[in-house]
Image 1 (spheres, each protein chain N blue to C red):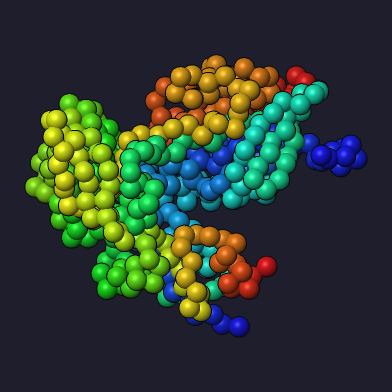
Image 2 (image 1 turned 90 degrees about the vertical axis):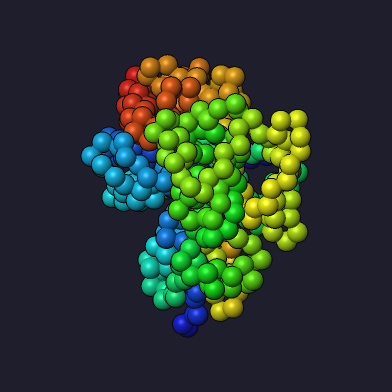
Length: 79
Length: 312
């Protein structure tokens, strides 16, 4: 099943890079927002996650803060 | 309690490497090339190198960012079939009988005939009211990660050493105003960086200043600062804490450390316990540098290899 995946990240953050690598390795399509450059998306991330740290990933409407691999896997239905 | 049968089932590795920063990864590359039977246990990969800004002193790279260099390290590591136990935190390291070491993590227990402690250091906390409450709500320990979120805002960098100056320099290009809150009478970081900071138009340096509290409602809105016997309040939306590092050596209770908690090693990376070696920033080796940590990791692995050869 295709998931709707949004990633809020900054260009330099190592965990953002790791998160994107992880999604690519698992062939998960996602839309990335660079919240360092896009102020509106930064505000959206703060509103959705209630905090100011990156990365934030939204999977089918569910918000996960940080590169929390077990929770991300569970949300994506990965083994 | 584990029954004897279960214990005998436990695999005994030649070597367990604790940590996957520059020291641990280099040790792992050497161990793989020596065809040792080993595993690497780590919370993450890249260690502090992954959090560094620009790296201009790693030979062969005239300029590379911390995350890029860490990615290169990881790529090198993954070239080999390595038994990598990621997202596990070591909670204890104990010497058992017959030269076997027991490594317990938050998830499992492992055994090996030798161990390399390469668990690095972590950011030191300031220990003031508001710090914990506002973590990720304006308080951060990683300017490289969260810095870009503070575009056009006012921020404070707490500290006066190189990591604070590095964070301040990064933020001069992003934030509107950057306060550098330094508890010492003078900035202690490199002269080159200090000069760049002094030349930046949007930096306000406060020496001899102590953070008393971090304030806010949902997010950080200011700092209470003790300065010249008075208490001042400044308005900031971000607080970057860069006051140094503490070694991740708490799990190694039987290992002798110095007053700073750094594991004491000799020139062959040996600790006080035969078979337990250490490398990188967690040790008392002078100068905490990526290139030094990598070199020490190589040395520690070769020492462990020789130690095991002598045991057989």
